[in-house]
Amino acid sequence: MVDCVDRGRQIRIQNIAGIVVTTLIIAAPALSGQFTWLHSLAPLPVFYYLTVLGKQQGGPIIITSMIIAGAISLLFGSLQILLFTFTFLPVGYIMYKALAQNEKPVIAGMKALLVLLIFWVLFGLVLAIVLQKNIYQEFILALDQNIEASYKLYAESAEIPETTREEIKFAFEQLKIILPKIFPGLLLISICSTVWLNLLLGNLLINKKNPQLSSWGNYREWSLPDSLVWVAIFTAAGLLLPFASLNIIAMNTALLLSALYFFQGLAVLANYLSKWSIPLGFKILIYLLILIQIYGIILLAIIGIIDVWSDFRKIRMNNTKNIS
Image 1: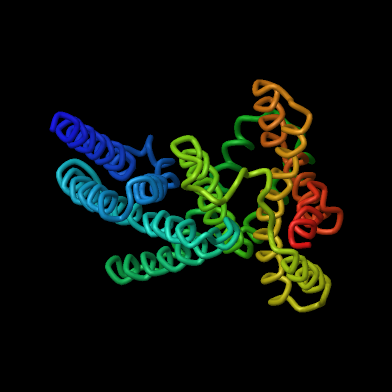
Image 2 (image 1 turned 45 degrees about the horizontal axis):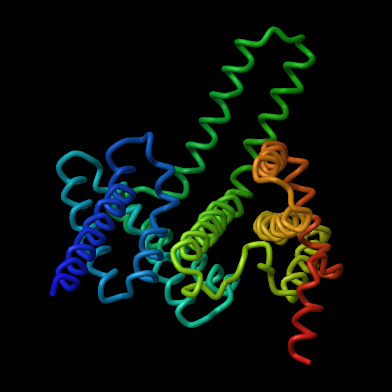
């Protein structure tokens, strides 16, 4: 009898803690601009509590948190921002379903990416109808204004020769031309990065809680489908052909592929750092040095593509041995 009471108390404490954590993550971006980065982590508690506690216990935690976050936003925050945060939540459910069905993390990621893209488009359409504005054009206009403001700030504050000033002006003008063309690709990178971050952190949390709940293994073992390299080949061809519309599509596709293969290159790096038993402190330092410079990111993306043929981690070789 005492054990049942203690068990019931533990469940209630666990549920309350889950509601508090989930509510904070969902509601915080609507309360203050300082917490907008929490948007990208909104799927995490959904995935975690559904996986660890199951749909029967975890589902009410998510629903209750959404209701409380809605009430808080109505009183103190922005309901519009909260609704945008809600568009991230289905990603957590897709990840939960994929893990429950023993799907590979790359399949879960692709499904989550598609779902998040659909919800963002729907949110944009609803917002456009309510505000009577073209949301995409508003974003492009905001980008143009930010570029112009950045140029003026730099030109006015920096003591530079006139010739150099003209070169900088030309560079900013080119940036104003190209950014609207590649904005869809940048948007896809944002979505892809959000999904990847939640897959990575979610798998780490699940493995820490109970490794038996996750079949995704370690991130250093994750790999993109080999067939995706054909998309990269066709994209390269699209960049070379003399068709403006095709070039724009290819540029945006190339941006997305660069992000995907960067994540694979990062997995290759993680594999070797683990293989060489590099201490945690040095691992963090290496990751930071790579992430803060564009050349490191490009290098990892190239390594990710080469891994398709070289199989640096011997994943395909091991899979072949296991089958035989």
